[in-house]
Image (cartoon, rainbow, N blue to C red; front, side, top):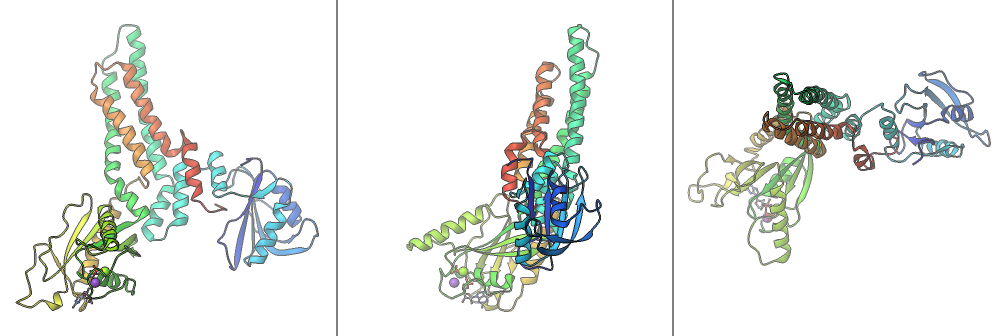
Amino acid sequence: MDRNDTIIALASGAGRAGIAVVRISGPACRFVLETISGRVTKPRRLELCTLRDPGSREMLDEALVAFFPSPNSFTGEDVAELHVHGGRAVVAAVLGALVVIPGCRLAEAGEFSRRALLNGKMDLSTVEGLGDLIDAETEMQRRQAMRQMQGDLREAVERWRTTLIEASAFVEAELDFADEGDVPHGLRERATGLLTSVADELRREIARARNGERIRSGLTVVIAGPPNAGKSTLLNALARRDVAIVSDIPGTTRDSIEVHWDLAGVPVTLVDTAGLRESQDPIEQEGVRRARDRARTADVILSLRPFDSPTEHLRDAPGAVIIPIRTKIDLATEHSDIGAQADELQLSATTSEGIEALVAKLEAVAKDVVADGGLVTRERHREAFVGALTLLERAISAGPDHPGEFFAEDIRLAMRYLGRVTGTVDVEDVLDRLFAGFCIGK
Ligand SMILES: Nc1nc2c(ncn2[C@@H]2O[C@H](COP(=O)(O)OP(=O)(O)OP(=O)(O)O)[C@@H](O)[C@H]2O)c(=O)[nH]1
Ligand SMILES: [K+]
Ligand SMILES: [Mg+2]
């Protein structure tokens, strides 16, 4: 991947559209404009130009052209945008004409953003925010991505790093004075005070991290319970679609069936599972194994049991919210009813009783997640925060007799962890993975 190449890509979505945007970035940008549109247009103005094939001079399209000279552009390099008519053949012809210009080639996935990062226009956390913004499917994902793209995470990390640098300065001073055998009072205490303030903030963000990750990647809600509890019926009712097969034969559902759902702006994957029971049938056994697997990693478990079954609800799912539900209550008679357990939601898919209350409960869970979202949106951030916190806690608890050199080293390593979040250190580790998920032209 040569950084001196001028890169070209369709920046808008593929397929038929009114307008398509072709983006160009790199040192040959001016030459490209001269070649294809006859002139370099005025900076940051849209100008109507006739695009011509560089070889045959045949007209390719009428386009609005914008030129963003370096360094005031998305990538920091000379950038141009060609707003062409969005037909597939138009786009193919324009791209075809551009890539034969010397020094030009098609961009790789995420290459524009990578250049923006390498040229200091963005840091790793804001590039991630941009990626998430483009992938955002729900309102809360959009808001979260926007905050990160605008630099909320970066600013916090930079603030903490500044505080830690200040703390290091006190320790350095202490080490200097120690050489002279006359250490002024309170330097270590002041350094420890600064570390404590950063550690407190890190701890708070780590506590909220799961919620931030849930907003980004979605909540998993698993419907679990014995065969014929009405799990598939409930999935269909919530999805308002006939997604899963329902029958009065126990063991109908084998595979886990997933439906995507937008719950108060939070993306949700709703999973219907095989009825939990002992079975001789190897396929059903596998279904039950998958059901238990999904329940183990769920954020919310809808634990179902029919009104006439004494089944115990799942209770031991660490980290998950469990909503116990008693189903088919439309069928309950004095003889058959074995009674409600405390905290059970009463539900009938036939009469729709309880459905609204269940949705309200789920929305409340989603709202709690959103209300306590915080700065962390990815496991990568959480790991860096945990790493930094561990070192700060070690330094804080070591006490005043801890050698200053060790204290300073812990601070330095903690700063290194924080630097991973914004990409000031170890950036290459993360880049390839991050940009692989990007589309071409981003
Ligand atoms: N009367 C009544 N019948 C229901 C209700 N919910 C489900 N049923 C019936 O109960 C039977 C089982 O429903 P399913 O949705 O297939 O149950 P399941 O839990 O998915 O069953 P498995 O996939 O076999 O584990 C079907 O005949 C449904 O029509 C309800 O609220 N009231
Ligand atoms: K069934
Ligand atoms: Mg089922």
